Image (tube, rainbow, N blue to C red; front, side, top):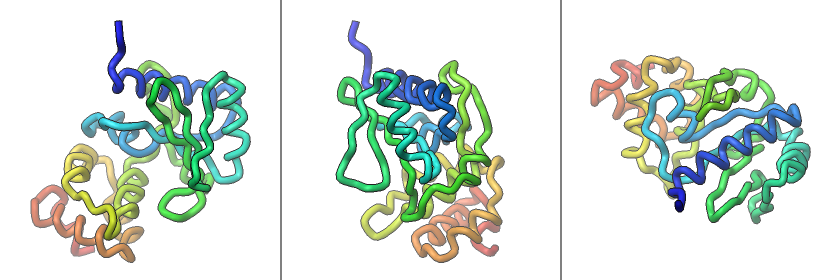
Length: 188
């Protein structure tokens, strides 16, 4: 029986997490699947993990040693784990900045598809998603269900402070306020 692409991503997500855990590489599930674990809709694409910038080489070795196919893309801030035409991204830079250990340390260990793994904190999920907005990628419709699902878990004052220099993110916070999803967030 053929598995669906979503099932393949889920399987590769688990295998990647287990390999990083077994090698004691600090990491956290981030992006859409981290939001999903916390109540947002399940993403329809790849899964993402963060590792501190100083752990990138060790993460690549751990994944390869676990028998996973590690692909080194042209970008110099991530690697891809590939299997059956699905990918898991392992990032050591996000929003143009190196991943710091404290970002991974703030993650909470949660069960994800029966595997215990660190999952990015809700406030950090929103900050990273909003800081990725720019003139080339500004799909606010994809962010609305995430913000709705996580709204009671997020420190919105911290989000507003951390994204204040990104006009696209500020507009999204204003939209959340206007729609009554997070009243007052844009008046910070």
